[in-house]
Length: 299
Image (cartoon, rainbow, N blue to C red):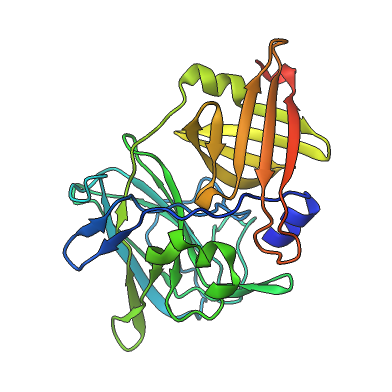
């Protein structure tokens, strides 16, 4: 399913972009005021990627690229060990493997004591998404026990489609537009170091109250807890990984998607989901969808 098509068919929209502090890598250390910025999860995330560093399936003719880096604590100095990094991308033919048991161009690794990770993959290609193009990118989900889980994407310098994509051209993405360097005549390399943020977590009882199925006017929403993220599914499709921001509210990557829960006196739980169709120039309007929790899934 195309991400634009899904958004339009669900008649959902998202919030405008807000600028945020950013970090710079000066070649030796990080400089700046914030951790690595988040990005949209999108409709192509699949949980359960196999543990492997080589994402290239047999028969691929894509240009080989090595993606590596270090995961650091918020102090920007201390490496984080035992961090799970999941990576996924489209193939050289612009397709995501969303269904096969092979999990093509999908995989996961864990960091060692030095905080390092590495994947062998191919240089991703831009792909046509409806009437528009999405810039080449690689998705990453980074999960740590003592820091806020991160969903993000990396883009690449010189890609002409960055200016056409709301997520890629956001001010919050500037330090995730990376340079591809030559490693050899046949292979390239990209470095992406990540600074994790502090966890701001809802307690277990709070998650128990809000997770489950919600009846919307035009379908169903489901909220599932995964570590300190709240995964949003719309009509059965994974769409976003949300971070708790306080006061029973959650926010997705780059502030696009926001969810607010209301615990009602009747025992019901009400949700307000607001999204912005960031990929359609003619549909940039706010729309709020309300839903009530299906009580058989528990209060």
